[in-house]
Image (cartoon, rainbow, N blue to C red; front, side, top):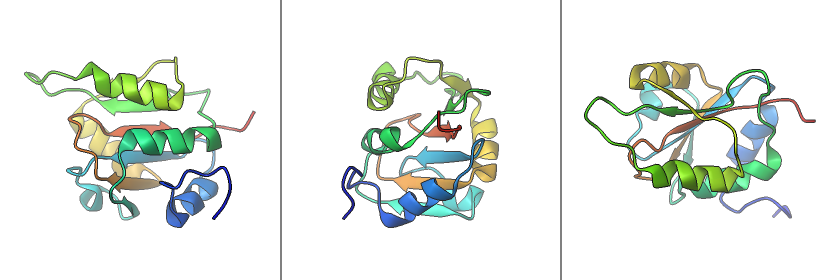
Length: 137
């Protein structure tokens, strides 16, 4: 066991975070996300919620300063977002900056190009989130 690393971050995810370079993206996906359909590199985080994973990643992570570093899926017409989801993510990341919202189709396309997709057990509607890694400064 390593000190200072959240227990929700398993060895495969820790290795993946280390391998990522600036500009690389990772998706933290809910239990319903078609992870294996959109990306060949899927890491399972069964029993873990996205907010807990964000809190575990935050101390290890530097956000991209040259592009929007946090992206979430925009609601489909007729759906309503639960503001508590974004608020809990902001709190976990201690993030005051912007969060971009893109269409479902665009989110899936970005997830397909992401370095990896982490499949969690979260069930929050529109809870999928994409993080873009930056330089450590």
